[in-house]
Amino acid sequence: MKHMISLIDWSADEVAEALRLAGEFKEKPLSKRGALDGKVLGMIFEKSSTRTRVSFEVATLRLGGHALFLSTRDIQLGRGETIADTARVLGRMCNGIMARVFEHEKLAALTASGLPVINGLSDLLHPCQALADALTIIEHKGSLEGRTLAYLGDGNNVAHSLINLGARSGLAVRVGTPERYGPDPAIVAAAREAGADVTVTHDPVEAVQGVDVVYTDTWASMGQEAEAQARAQVFAPFRIDEALFAKAAPDAIFMHCLPAHRGDEVTDAVIEHERSVVFDEAENRLHTEQAVLFMLMA
Ligand code: CP
Ligand code: NVA
Image 1 (cartoon, rainbow, N blue to C red):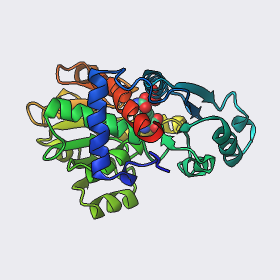
Image 2 (tube, rainbow, N blue to C red; image 1 turned 135 degrees about the vertical axis):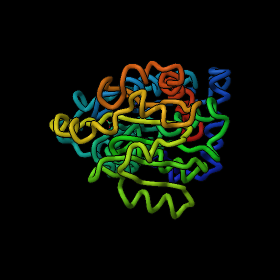
Image 3 (cartoon, rainbow, N blue to C red; image 1 turned 60 degrees about the horizontal axis):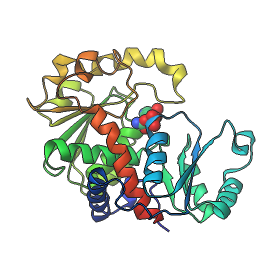
Image 4 (tube, rainbow, N blue to C red; image 1 turned 90 degrees about the horizontal axis):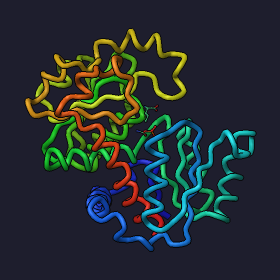
């Protein structure tokens, strides 16, 4: 059984195939309309979502299947039924599971369903985001190979999956974070082991100097709301404003997984910049997820 729990579990060829298919779906959304005929994707959400929920629901529909929105506010999982029991029940009724969870380990527990499991974001990783980001970079920069992306801010789930993308594509990744907020050293080490060009620095200017892509995410992720004020102080030097964006290559693009906290990690001027591609990036979630669903569930 194949899953999309981490991008590092997919080969470079599989990632390339997903991106090729995504391009096809972007041009012809209904080209494989019957592929998920009669099939159901159970979508468990422990956290809020706009893009992930809508893109998976629309992508499933475009393949002829049906997606169920299962918020833990409503299902028994939120009242203490175990992940393993929930998985076994969904295994009897659905054909695939997409889950947005706090603890990453819950995704492995969901494989007890016997179904393909897709990570719709965990505290550790956000692989579907990185896949959409890859498509966006290819569209705007022509390729991943030979390009450099600077991620500024928290060394979090989004940063980790971009590092994994580097290991599966030839995209060089520079991560600039405050001290103590760097990416998980085990993820960096595994990516380097797989041949990725990953640099970690605590200097925002060094991180963005001359790069093709400048990327950021919220300073306080879902579940870290209580730390938001303290983090705002520590992360302030990593805010992407016009001066910092100008240190990147003259044709560099700006990316953000969204939702953005305008004025914190990015200024209005940069997110509205003519070289900001954040809404192409959001749209590409739909096309890349349609590709993942097709590869795992058709
Ligand atoms: N980027 C992303 O995953 O957005 P949502 O939280 O809205 O799903
Ligand atoms: N790092 C953010 C990403 C949201 C899509 C979070 O986990 O909240």
